[in-house]
Amino acid sequence: MAETLKNYIGGKWTASDAKRALDVRNPATGEAIARVPLSTAGEVRSAVAAAKAAFPAWRETPPLVRARYMFRLKALLEEHFEDLARTVTAEHGKIIDEARGEVRRAIENVEVAAGVPSLMMGYNAEDIAVGIDEDCVFQPIGVFACVAPFNFPAMVPFWFLPYAVACGDTYVVKPSEVCPMSQSRLFELLDAADLPPGVVNLVNGDKEAVDALLADPDVAGVSFVGSTPVGRYIYATAAAHGKRAQCQAGAKNALVVMPDAVIDRTVAAILTSAYGTAGQRCLAGSLVVAVGDVYEPLKAELVRAASRIKVGDGLDESTQMGPVVSKKSLDRILSYIEKGLAEGARLLLDGRKVKVEGYPNGYFVGPTLFDCVRPEMTIAREEIFGPVLGIVRVDTFDEAVATIEALPYGNAASLFTSSGKWAREFRYCVPCGNVGINVGIAAPIASFPFAGMKDSFFGDLHGQGRDAIQFFTDRKVVITRWF
Ligand code: NAD
Image 1: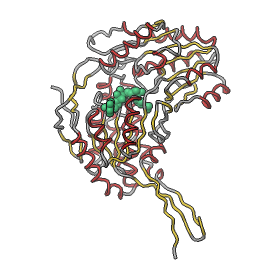
Image 2: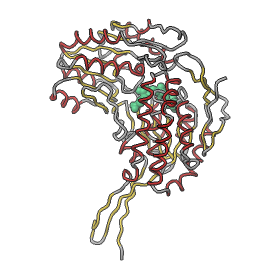
Image 3: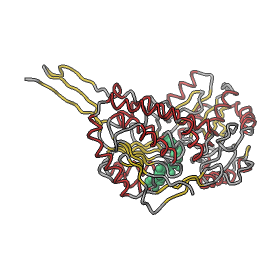
Image 4: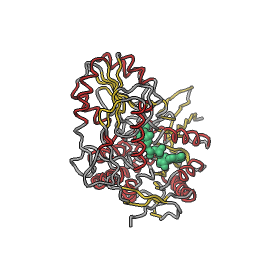
């Protein structure tokens, strides 16, 4: 029987007494590989209480000493790197190389957070009036929490936790109930890093646990990553309870190709963007906007290259695209393909036909490519979150930008061109947080904010980098005069 995951509260692994639980399935085989408890509001309360109790001493721990825990954690993460990557693939399905990339990105956030003794420095001015000086210090606030999505089960909580902890706050992670195993593995390493009990806590669960975090008066702030409707709800509910919140949400990302683009490099970048992680990345390109004459050669090359992508079990090193995460996701993606056909788009590649030998119960859908997509179609406006790419044909650069402006989302957009003028124009005007120029996945490294605009982000301070330091601290101003 598959192992039931535990919570980690106040430095101890604790079996949940929840009545509700779910199977966690390997998406390549459909087999249940763990059970995840859907913890109660009472269990969330215990985790928040443990975090609250740990805060005063942790806050007084010098930043240099807090940073040393990050160095210890980094060493443990390196030691268990491959095992973590394999856990990500087992529960999520992404290919092992993508899982390694994800774990690397998680580690990079620990590395940046280790710079907290400098990152948290305030500023000051002498003689703001005669004989009076003014200082601004950055202070930790208390207990913070994150609510995470399924698609980067190891990395996403690490966009937040290392910064919060390094800044002197204490933390509660609520992982995705679809892919909760990677966080359990990571918390074993946090435990081995010997952080004082209560500094970091893990509570498995679903909406009940999230609502308990949002209503708890001892939670100062919440970081959310997930779909737009839930992000909007969490932002509004957190605000109604007087908390700060940063909510990174859904996406519909366009990849604009100009006639002067370098075609082979552009096609390679588009394929990785659209079909990497089986399209389940918030930065995945899902619309190719072909400008003018590039349309025919681009289309031919996309079909040729995408039809060669090898679909299979992510743990097989030769696989280029794994399954999607669940039966529910598979059904949603298939229904979008039906919808695209019904609205008049033309299928150039039909992923519904894919068969993976030896994996009859896996949630596989192959690379799917639609032509004749018009901006008003459902498949051009809604987030499909699967390996489905649509080609929109336009005549001019301005029409391409207008297509992006009309989308409700503003997570990412890319331009492929050899022209500095178009590149400058594009980065200046597109209303998207993460912009790629000849880059298909505009993923910010840990020292930069993971941006987002419009329905892709609710809040002002983003995850990672300097924004994270600001989110997890308050600015206190001290004005001093000595008689
Ligand atoms: P989701 O919104 O279904 O779930 C995210 C989290 O919210 C989970 O922990 C879940 O338990 C919780 N949740 C779900 N419904 C809730 C409710 N009604 N009330 C309270 N909490 C609830 O998202 P998902 O399917 O896990 O992840 C995919 C989504 O995440 C996509 O839309 C993707 O674009 C987005 N995403 C965005 C970013 C970004 O940085 N903008 C990054 C990764 C993923």
